[in-house]
Amino acid sequence: MATTVQSADAERYDIRTVLSGGVILGAVTAVGVVIFALLSRVLAGTFETIVRSVLILAGGAVCGYFPAASVRPRSTDGIAWAATLGLLGSVTFTALDTGLLRPFHVYHWTWDAIGGGSGFWYISVWWMGSTVLAWLGAWAYARAASRFGRADIRLLVGQTVAAAIVILAALVALGIGPFHSATMALAVSLAFVAQVPLAAMFARR
Image 1 (cartoon, rainbow, N blue to C red):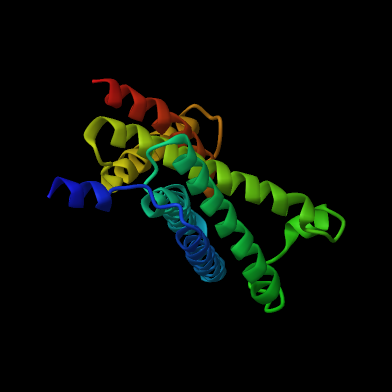
Image 2: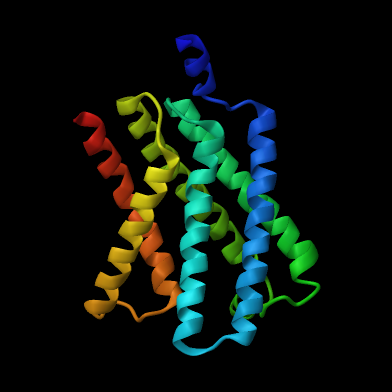
């Protein structure tokens, strides 16, 4: 029985898991972007900000913890492979974005105009950001698993979401950022950064 449980919770960073996970993550990201863009066309004001912020919060949780849930990292190698899955997800999304979303003008490519007609100046930044989110999520997962034998992904997601909401409220209350979906994106990033030492702290208890 113990052997069965241990096997079920073992790290999975075979090529099939990483590649298929990356494709799934990229496809889910593309769907989220399309929903975000379409809702932005019909919503306005505070309600639009709330809906877009919720989508960003959910998207951040998926990008940060789906790689960890797929790989189940326990070691440095497992964390690295989870981060690789996150990178592949962003590359998959870039292919879908360039091949489908751009030709159908799903949303305005403002960043292309800033870059003189090219999007490659920020696409690489997106790849790095996705990799870092997956890396932080995998790190938190591994720290939690080292304490309890297995990590509760729902608990980790709940902690990160709660932290992001608190950070968003603090940023807005202190006047550091407006109540905007971009501020939520910043809050989600900071929440993942905070999640790692929190997971380590709980792991030491």
